[in-house]
Amino acid sequence: MLFSDFALPPQVLKALEQEGYNEPTPIQAQALPIVLEGRDLIGSAQTGTGKTAAFVLPALARLAEFKQPRPRGPRVLVLAPTRELATQILDATRKLGKFMRLNTVSILGGMPYRLQLQLLSRPVDLMVATPGRLIDHLERGRVSLADLEMLVLDEADRMLDMGFVDAVETIVAASPATRQTLLFTATFDKRMVQLTQKMLKDPARVAIEAETLTVDRIEQRLHVADDLGHKRRLLAHLAASPEVEKAIIFAATKRDADALAEELNAQGHQASALHGDMTQSARNYTVQKLKQGRIRLLVATDVAARGIDVKDLTHVINFDLPRQAEDYVHRIGRTGRAGASGIAISFASPADRQLVDRIERYTGAALAPHVIPGLEPTVSFSKRSGPRKQGSYQNGPRRFGGPGGSHAGRNEGSGGYRGRSGGQGHYQGHGQRSHGQGNHQGQGHAPAANQPGGDRPLKRAS
Image 1: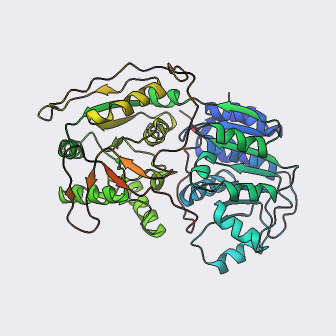
Image 2: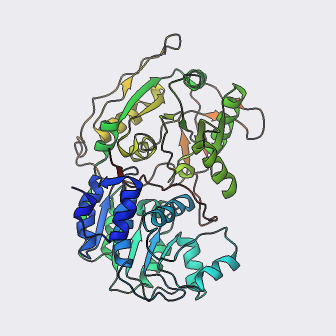
């Protein structure tokens, strides 16, 4: 199947061809016919599947039907949980709609109000916004959704995790009942069922299961560590390996990310931290350094790394395992994108045995044990059972999804790394756990930046 088989405008097909895309990914192939028919849709898919283009392409097709846009009110509204993701969606929209005469804007926190008011005073075809800032403008009468034809909620599960449910419901209530609604989520639990029942009309559902993402494209390795010091030595060895060309290292807390980045720099590596305590401009600058190759190691927390797309990322390293299997899939999905291969390396102590077991059951794939000569563990690490496919828990069917691990409430890391930001890191002894505030980003937003498209939207022509 080719993109030319769909009822897409010639301007969009021209942009796809120029970008080197001719074949849809599975989520695009399933979603496009449904959305182009005008039906509501629930898309269950992880990052890296091409879901951004699954809604951007039909949105552009709708906008190709000429209607004179009016100030303050978009015809298409895309809601995203974070500034980074919103920026990438807007960038992908402009890239694929570059041969169309469209007015596209982003409404994010951190932008000067005067600039936002200028943008809203002009006709708007498509708006990408985070819920908090959009609510502010709605309440002040600066935005009208009276002419809205299509509403897209991207990563709706994360919006719930970040406390945006009331804002989303308010936005939906301000939209016409005749709108088409598309909702994309990586997980589909009871909360999502309730949300979709309120907001969508007879939706079709398409799903790309997690194991097809993790097993097919990403080599998963497990390194057993005796204690925190052992994990640090394993990381130092991997950081010095030529195999690790560019990597994201996940830490449990903001303080851990700072301390690990500081230690890696002290070892002579080009590394930076990325977390929610940094200003938005600092976060954007750090991500750009990784994309441009000025650093090769990014030490990040889960929420801060959400929505980041780095094309040539070779490795993801879990210094601390996430508390939820779903978040493991989100993390390792940073590599192995758009058909490329990648390597995911996880450190685990005997205390993490149950976490590893949950991850293997969720993905349906075993984490292959690896040992580095000279850094062998002295502790045993016996797993309870082999991997089982989704839904095969002995105590009943597994819920498809659940509250995001470190995004909801307190963030508990298994590593116990206790470095000080801006000072000399120090470490608490064997078996300690790190307890920090969750990386919840609230409703603050920052200006959009011109960044390459987010969710690796398409499959390139070979």
